[in-house]
Amino acid sequence: MASFLFRRLAQFLISLFGITLLTFGLLHLAPGEPTDLQTTLNPKISAQARENLRRLYGLDRPLPVQYADWLRRFVTLDLGRSFVDGERVSKKILDRLPITVIINLLSLTLIVLIAFPIGIVSATRQYSWFDRATTLFVYIGFALPNFWLALLLMLLFGVTLGWLPLSGVQSLSVAQMSFFERGVDWAEHLILPVLTAAFIGLAGYSRYLRSEMLEVVRQDYIRTARAKGLSERQVIFKHALRNALIPVVTLIGLELPALIGGSVIIETVFAIPGMGQLSYQSVLARDYPVVMGLTMIGAVLTLAGNLLADLSYAWINPRIRIS
Image (cartoon, rainbow, N blue to C red; front, side, top):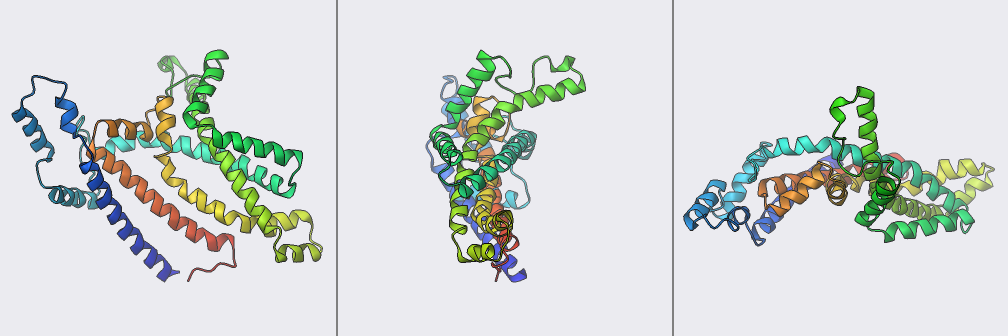
């Protein structure tokens, strides 16, 4: 296990270095600079003023020098300052991180609690009315884009019924509310974003688990377990489910980077001040330090998710040993 961990950590660092190099190069080679957005629409800005602005941001230096400077600061966990407002990138990210993590953890919990039973029942009762109904649900889930579903939910529950707020994380009158009322108000604002984030995942996870369960229940060791006189409940939950969960665990591990990437559309549509909205705004503003900081967090989460998924294999399935 120690050797495995050492090799995976070495791969982790090499992969992270490659991602930083590739991301930094692509970001700076893309057309447009931060200074363009600040000077193009202002006719009073001279060419000398624009060059001074480039020098202030360090954009006049050769690209390898800029990358070496960024990498040196990144190693010391210094993500630099935003080109837009001069605020530290780490503070901007930490300010927006909690709401994004909460929305994604709630949606992931909802997915696991609903998709797993759906997948198990659909597999054990293949071609039943329940299986056919969930299959239709899956097709709808795959077909509906996130932003379209968000707009439908906003129209139904926010505009037509008036049950839930349409955007933000708190009402304008929150200052006059009691502690309990603030909690209720905050929860009401999160219902629609969480439902939207969970809906697409429900379809995918239930379908993956159903297909894996169907393959596992046809294996010889499952027939042997039934021949030994074990109840169907023991066969499904003790023998079949643990093996069927292996690919699903991989998917859950890869959900970690969705803490950022998957939130862009939802946070933009619902006007939630999270990391997804920050990513969208930073890309539009060519705010290189913020984009690099967010990309590095996504890369670390992706690599860490893969590592955790590999380690989970041995725990879920005793037949698999890490060597």
